[in-house]
Length: 351
Image (cartoon, rainbow, N blue to C red; front, side):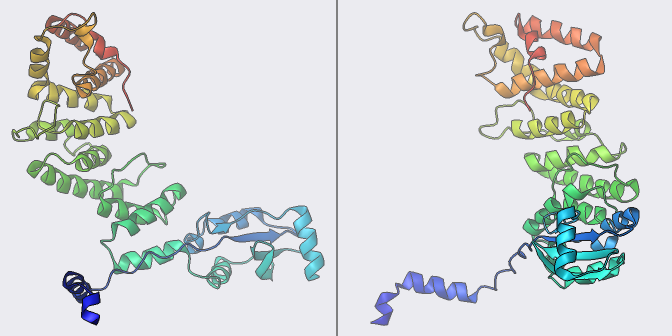
């Protein structure tokens, strides 16, 4: 009778699940907010400030630890409740509860021990988890999200770099000047691996964005346009309307990175390669079609909005570089295909 309650397909599925290896450990949970403060006598504010950036206290971020000073009312109330004498005193609190305290200005080791008595900080838990599961990209992205707002910080920079490299995330805007001794070798490795990947399969949007962003760290790395020009001829994928060897989304990702980093010379070179690799021919064929409507000469928005955005980005790049002669010749070339087409060089670029 029991067997009738479990269909054979479900029973086999259960057996298969039991044979599978156990799932990886879950990500560690977030911890509660703590507060370190100083009851001031003749407080050394500079020394207290140095403690806040000490390497021993780096693992606790703003979601776990606050350094908000005590108000006068809080200080008076605590002295009265605890019968503390006048003078300097440090406190570790959670809400209104004093978890630990001591006289004078503490050392970093004393504060670290008091904090660890309340549990493991999120960053340390992630460090341990990632060491055990280095390929868990969700954990690395969690650590990236934790570390990024706290940069620049020399104690966190290597973690941040390691997670960027392993996760394959684009570099993005860095809130600090990267140390070339550690960042340039990493950029070379990322770009070497990514370029090999793109030569074999040039359709990856994330790979193109990653290459474009990381290549900014070393001028000796081939520029994105150079990599694009070196690709073998690839047949267009079904549904890819952009002329050239890569999907429109990949091209848009590269252009977005170059615009964000204000690399206008490279942006112009990128569109130039696309122009020579198929965009010019495609546009000539499109322009030879009968015009529809009064503004048919510039109506690419429905036919191929990605081509419209390419031309707009090209116009922006040439304008930012002050290349008036090239911009004028391009306007002439476009208007020769269809009158009014050069207006697309002045269309605002979408972000």
